[in-house]
Image 1 (cartoon, rainbow, N blue to C red):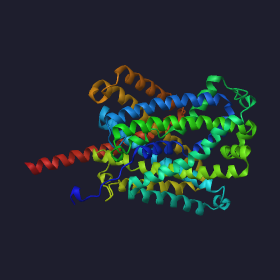
Image 2 (image 1 turned 120 degrees about the vertical axis):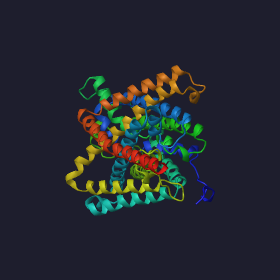
Image 3 (image 1 turned 90 degrees about the vertical axis):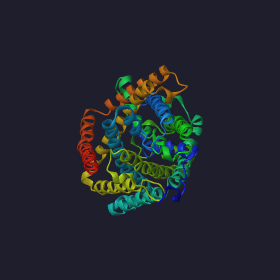
Image 4 (image 1 turned 30 degrees about the vertical axis):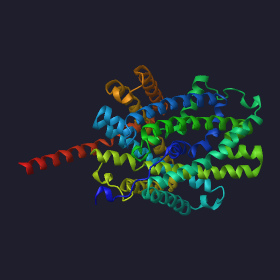
Length: 449
C-alpha cells in the first residue's frame, strides 16, 4: 500500500500533550502519599519543594532535548544519539520494562479504589483480576485505534482528577492552623535524614515528566509543544501536590493521617462532609484510569523507536492502519496480563511490590542518561540548541544528572543491586540483535557477490 493511501494521522495538540504529562504523573499514588509523609511532619513539605525542583530540572532537560530532537522514543532517542547503540538499547530496555510493569501496579490501584463503592470486589480475586484486565485491554484497544483518541481520554480524565485535588488546595487556607504543622520533624531522625527519606517517597509521584517526548512524532509542532507541555505540566503537577498535601495536613490530625488509607478523601470529608469524600474517591478512580491510559499509550512507543533502529525485534516496528504501534501495545499488555495474574496470587504480592520498585529504578536510569546526553549534545551539536547559552544548558544538565544519581542512591542498596541485574538481563538480547544484523549483512554481501 502506498504512503498516500494511508489515513492522515491525527496528532496530540498542546492541551493533550500537557494532559499526557500531568495525567501520567498524577496517577494513583498521590492519593495515598500524604499518609506516608505524615510520619515526617512538616519536613515533608520541604521534601516536596526539593523534589519539585529536581523534577523541574529534569523537565527542562527533556524540554530542551524535545525541542532539539523531536523524535519518537524520548529518553531512548536522546541516549542513542549521544552515546550509541548499547546505551540506547539499555535505555529502551529499562524504560519499556518500567512502563508495562508500572501499568500492572496502576491497574491494581484502579481496582482497589473501585472497592470503595464495590466492597465485594476486594473479596473475590477472580472478579478483581477480571475488572483490572478489562480496563487494560479496553485502553489497549483505544490506543491501537489511534493516539488522538487516547489523547482525548487523557485530557478528560486529567481534568476530572484535578478537580477534587485543586478544590482541596483552594480550600486549604480556610482550614489551616499553625498547630497542624508542628512539630516540624516528629520522625526522630535528623532533619536532613527526614527530608531525604521523605524526598525519596515524593520522587515516585513525578515519574512521567518525559511523557510528551516519547510519542514526539504524534505531537503537533513538537519543537514548541513538547517543551511547553513538559515544563507547564511539571509546574502544575508540583503545585497540586504541595498544596494538596498542605490541605490534608490542615484537615486531618497527624495521628489519624498516619493510619489513613484514603487521606484525600478523609480530608475532603472533614472539610465539607461525606459527599466530598465520595467525590474525591471518584477522582481517585478516574486518576488511576487516566494514568493507566497514558502509560499504555507510551508502552508501544519506545519499542517502536528502538525496533526502527534495529535495537528491538523487528516486529515491534510494525504499525496498524491507524499508524499506531499495535504490536508493541498488544505484546506489552500481554506481559501486563501475565504479571496481573501473578499479582492476584497472595503469595506473590510482596514480590510484585518489590518489582515495582525495580521498575521505578529502571526509569531513573534513563533520566540520568538523558541529562548526560543533553550535556554532550549541547557541546557537540550546538546548532540544534541555537539561542541557548552553553553555560545554562550545561549547568542544568549537570545538576539534573546529580539529582537523578542522588535519587537512584536513595532507592536503597538492595533495589539498586537487583535493578542492575535486571538491566544486565537485556544484554543477551542486545547480543542476539547485533548478531542478527551481522548475519543479515553477510547474506546481503554474498548475494551481491
